[in-house]
Structure formats: C-alpha cells, structure tokens
Image (cartoon, rainbow, N blue to C red):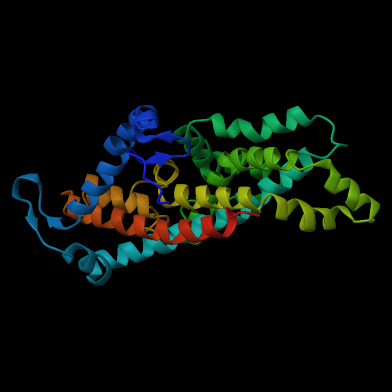
Amino acid sequence: MAVKSPKHSTLGNGTIVTWLPYIAPALLFYVVFMAWPLLNSLWLSLYTGSAGSRRFSGLANFIKLVTVPQYAERYWGAFAHTFLFFFIHLAVQNGLGIIFATLLTSKNLQGREFYQTVIFIPVTLAVLVTGYLWKLLLNPVWSGPFLQKLHLDFLVRPWLGDRFTALMCVSLVSCWQWMGIPTMMFVAALRNISEDYFEAASIDGASPIQVFWHIKLPLIKSVLGMIAILTFVNNFNAFDVVFAMENANGAPNYTTDLIGTLFYRVGIAGQHPVGIPDPGMGAAIATITFVVLCLGVIPTLRATQGRD
C-alpha cells in the first residue's frame, strides 16, 4: 500500500508551521545583517565609479586588482603579509595556547586561577590601548634608557620602523593580546576528556608526552579545527592592531599592510595619491577574501568536525 505524503514538509517531528516562527527572528536578522550585505558586496564588485555615476564593468575590477601594477603590487603584498600574519598566530598564539591549557589542567598545578587570570587579562584590553602601549615600549627613544641600564642594549632598536621586524612585532603583540581565548577553549576541551583514558594510559606506563600526543590531541581534534578556523577568519579581517601600532598605510613602506588595511584604503578612505574611495574595487577585495576564506574553512570543517 502506498504511503501518502504529509501535507506539510517536516523537520524532525514537527511541521514547518510549528518550528518556523521560532527561527524567523534569527533568520530575519541573518538575512538583513549578513546575507544581504554579502550579496550587495558581490553586486558592487561588478561596478565602477561612485554612487552617482556607477556603471557596470563585469570582472574588470578583479582583473585590475591582480594584473595592473598599480593595484597588483599592493594587493599581492597585503595578501602575502596576511598569510604570514595568520601562520604566526597559528604557531605562536594557538601553539602556546594549547601548552598553557595543558599546564592549567594539570592536577599538580598550584595557583591555577591566578595564571588563568594573567593569561586572559590582555583580552579585556582595547586594541587601540594595547597597540599604543606596545608602540611606546618598542620605541627606542622611550624605552632605550631603561633597557641600557639593564645592559640590554641589543634590544634598543626601532622594531616598528624596520621593514624586516615590523610585521613580526605587530603579529606577536596581537598573539599576546588574544592568546587567552584559545587557551580557555583548550582548557574547556581538555577538562571534558574522561579520566578513564588517563587511568588506562597510566596503567600502560605512558609518559606525559605520549598521553598528550596520543590521547589529548586526537580527542580535541574538533576544537583544534574550530580554533584554527576562527584564527584564519579573524586574521584575514585584521585591521585595528596594524592601525594602532603603525598606520592605515601599513608602515614602514607597506611591510605591515594586510588585506584589512588595503580594503580600508581602497574602498573607504581612498588610496594614495588620489584619495578618492573606489567602492567597486574595495568590494572586489572583499569578494576575493570571502572566496579565500571559504576555500580554507570548508575543507578544515570537513576534516575536523566529522563524526568520530
């Protein structure tokens, strides 16, 4: 006997009429503040000119961005700097985060709450304040006399004015400020592991390093993947730390220029020397960034968030 299809589409045990009112506010919020701006940006990337004289140009903005020297030099430079900025965070911020989390979840650690507070305090500070303070500390005119008294003359140098050290300094300051977030996420994940695993490892005579590599890391794979994704997305949208410590031009000589600062100059403030914003070119930068994020996020999600 044939089975009749229900009158309403279902999700789980309820009909659309049942569950749609509950998700409608969140769906409306998502469409208005996320989906629509994204689609509008994609549409804007296909046009050139200002609002009063905008005309359709197809893929011209994308072609100019990656081929015309005036734009390509700045774009590919910012693209490379952003990837380096991300890898420094992935290695330093997340690497130290999982080490600190392992120590904080150790049964023999004394003063656990104090260390957790010290690690998390920088997260509560405003980025502009943090950037300005570190800018002073890294300025040899301001910190030089103090370092010389401590016989640390090798540290007296213009760290933020040297094209070989500026991006590294900005990246490490950003790692220092935001390290508390992955650390606390790792702490929560490690505390969620059943003690049965550790008891079995102890019976087998496993060392702490073996426990870390063969028990802890595999069991928090999903958290590792999620933190890597958050780091990737946040770093490709970074702007404030560079603006606070250097400027919107990514000084010195664009060596700290990121995708975020390039987008700001081109699409909002206007690129030197013209100084006239180009919304279409800015939208093209944002669109390519969105594609790059998807290419990085989707495979990572599939690799780390699958069913065990």
